[in-house]
Each structure stands twice: as C-alpha cells, then as structure tokens.
Image 1 (cartoon, rainbow, N blue to C red):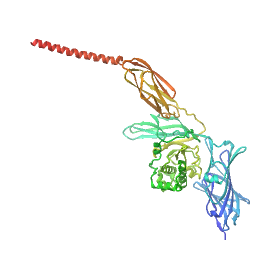
Image 2: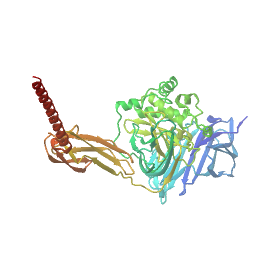
Image 3: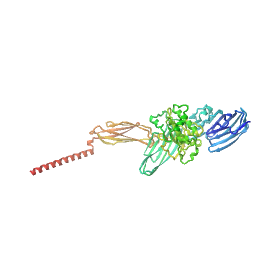
Length: 619
C-alpha cells in the first residue's frame, strides 16, 4: 500500500531558492531549470521548472513546499500540463512558506511530475547609489538533486560586471540583455555574486558626546573613518576643530581634544567615503614580526587560548592543518557560518551584551554580528593567522537577509584576516549565514564602510553610536593641503645653538601621504640629522620637528640662508649672525662687570691706603 508523503521537499530561500531534501529525500529525485530575469528597476521574475521523479513504489507525492527567508515576494503562481495549481502561502517572522498542491499525484516507480513555479522578488538585485549588485546563494548539498541549471538575465544597461564569482559556465550578450548560466557544480560550491560598478560613495555624519566628570583636565580622542586599501576618506568638517589628528597602530584616525574638569563637549564630523571593489594599490603590504605578534595575541572576547576555542580548531583541522593563511581562514569561516545561528530577537535588547568567542561557542543560537566576528578572530589567531575586527556601516536594503546589530543605529561588525599574497582581506560570515549562502569570503562588495579598526585591542577605539550614512550619486576629489611654517630667529649671536622648528599642517580634506623634510645651510652647522621622514598626516592633523643649528665661533659676523625642503617644496630664510661679544645685551653686561670689578678694586685699594696711613699716624 502506498504511503502518502504530505511534505516532499523543503526548499529554503534567502536571496535565491535553494532546494534541500526534507522528508523521504531518497525516494524522490528532482531536476531544476531556473531562470532569474532582472528588470531595469531591480524587480526579478523567478521562474522554476521542476521535474520530480519517484524512485520507489512505496511513496507518492501530493504536494510541494517552498520556504523563503523573505517577505518581499509577490505574484506567486504554479502550473502544470493540466493547468493552474493551488498555492497556499503563510508568512511567519521573516519567512514565507508556499505549499503547492499537485493536480495529479506522483505515484509509481520512475513516474515524474513537471510543474512551473513563478513569482517576483526585490531581494535578488539592488541598486546601491552608483552600482547594481546581484546576489544568489549556493544550493546545499543534496543527494535528491539530479540537475540544477540556472540562467541569470540582467539588463545590458547595467554594463559589464566588474566582478563575478564564481565564473559562469557561459556568458552571452543579447540586444538588451546579459545572460549568465550556472550549473549544479558551480552553485554547490558557492553562491553567485555580481557587481556592476567599480566605486561607491557614501556621505556620513558622526556625532560624539564627550564628558569629563573628573576634577582635573583630561585629553581624550574620537575615531574618524580611516583610509584603507578599499576606501578613501574625505573629511569636510570637524566641529570644534581638534588639537591634532593622529594615526594609531591599526590605521585609525584619532581626533584629540582637551576637556576641562567637569565639562562636556559635542563633536560633529562630516565627510564622504569612496569605496573600491578592487584594491587601490597593487603593492601588497607586509607585517613585521611585532605586528604579527600583536594581531595574533589573546584578548578579552578573543580568547584564543581557551580550551573550547582550541577544541573547535582541532575539529576544523581534523583532516590536517593547511599551510596558507587563506586556507586556514576559509575552513574557519565555513565552520562559523555553519555552526552559529543568528538570533534576531537579541536586536530588541537595550544595549546588546557582547558575548565573546567562548560564550558564542557555548550558545551557538544566540549570535549576532559581534559573535560571528569575535569567534572568527579568536579561531584564526589561535591558528596563527593575524586577524582583527572592523566596525562600521553595512548598507542593507533587507535587514532580514543582511542584518545590522552593533549599536542603536544598527551598525555592523565583520572581520578581516591577513593573507600573505593579498594583505588584509575582509570577509563577512554573518551575512553569508543570514543570506542563505551568498559568498562573502571569496569576494566582497561596496556596502561595507569601515568606521574603526580593532586589532591592537578588542575594545577600543569606540565608534560613535550617533551615525548617519547615506548613499551619494556624486563623486568627490580628495585633496590634501599642506601648510608649512618654519620658525627661526632672524638675529642670533654666534657660538650658541639655535633652536628652530618646522610644522606641517594638513588643511585639506584628505590624507597627506608621508614624506621627508630636510634642512640645508651654508656656514651654519646642523646638529643631528639634516633629513627626517614623517608619516602620513590626516586632515586636521599636523607634524612638527625641531632641529638645532650652531655657528662655528663666538666672534664671527655673517649672514646665512637656511633652506627647508618639504617634499620638493622649498622655503628659505635669511639669518643674521652677530658676534657674541658685540651683541648689545652682552656689551652692557660686560661693561657692568668691568665697572663692578674696577669699583671693587678701587674700594679695596682705598681701604688699603687708609689703613696704611692710620698706622703711620699711630707711630
């Protein structure tokens, strides 16, 4: 007697449908021909032609269930050769379930049923400012999928994709459409990600609220968005202006302020960020041994030496430890994506508590982006791979698929690791987990704006919790403006050292790259180095250097020219050297000393004469 299977297959969709066997998986086989047709407005028409084959005489199928991790779907319909099929939908939390009732049961061994499912969605293609992005997650491994062929069609007006992963089986250009084909082998390894556009521009405004409750003045700093190899930063306004802007060991820009006792200070920062899909420079950075040690050390939330973390590493590398940092990071990344479960209910908590790597391992269904990041950093550091945390803004049009959860303004956290061949590489295990398999390891996007880098410390610097970021259609031209001032006395006396200083102030809106300055003279001697280097100077920051000069002798009188060369810009200043003995204050002092000595001499002489006369009178 046939046993009825009420639920044959459960298909999970995040951005794209991913078939996965559920009940009686080995009793049925399925083949899929899927078409995704993206419109000029980004609305995608999804058409799935599904053939279901019965592999046994003991079961038959009467319906088909599809679960989608999104509510942004519409115009759902299903048909077979006999006509329309009944479709019932149910929305719960962030998921939509569609149950399709077959017009004819799939009964009997080798019997098959072919039907077509069709719907619209806005979750596959998104326009982000100047770019388009199309994301399709991979299909899970399943023994009941015989074939899976996918055709993706996008408007030719999108232009050629600037990045596509994995490479398609084929690519064709029609009159107004670009088509890409993928098969089961490609989609089983990774999802499909396409970017159309090379850059993205964001405008940002950050607000910091500083407070000093102590009885003494304090120096404090706020972090500005840093330049990285994938983003350029333009700072158009800082109010009030800081005392200085420096760069820390992670590359963060720190704006410094002095707060008087028991005082408050609000700081407003405005600017723009230009993000690049490819690294701006081809030269690969290197890490010193000290930096490698720094970025592999244990820290709060990154408990790399904890037995639980080490046990997880042993599980990941049970087939052997890879040699390269990339292969180690890839295995750890996959483990975290498949082990942790994102918990959206924690976003409702006032002040989300950061759990850290160990607690995340012990509470795998309580993760948000912080736990995905902390566990990745802890495990990669435990395996000897330098890594760190990035805090910032992740642009997301669907926060069910790409959630943000770092602060009250829903900022985001993601990690990066150091690759010997590529340098620092950003990845996002959170979004791969929540988007159903979109690949955020092998390629990245133009949606992650870095506001702060945490590598030296797991806790600092603190990002602002008052952030406003918007997409911009405009481009920008960052330009440093180096103001150079040289402080040297116009008149000096010979034989004594002269202290002079050079101050470089970046009055532009973008970073001034580092360089060198040199001091050259004719007769005056430069004490110490004649040439020194200076590091990059952020907007509103400065660099100062003091150097000592000295004339050869005390009695010389001459004029000299001091030349300061800063990155090819030359500044000259004439200096008049006067003999020390003829320098007017010295002359007055010397004359006074001579008069004093003569006065003392004549006084002593007078006393001596008086005493001598007095003795003569006594005789």
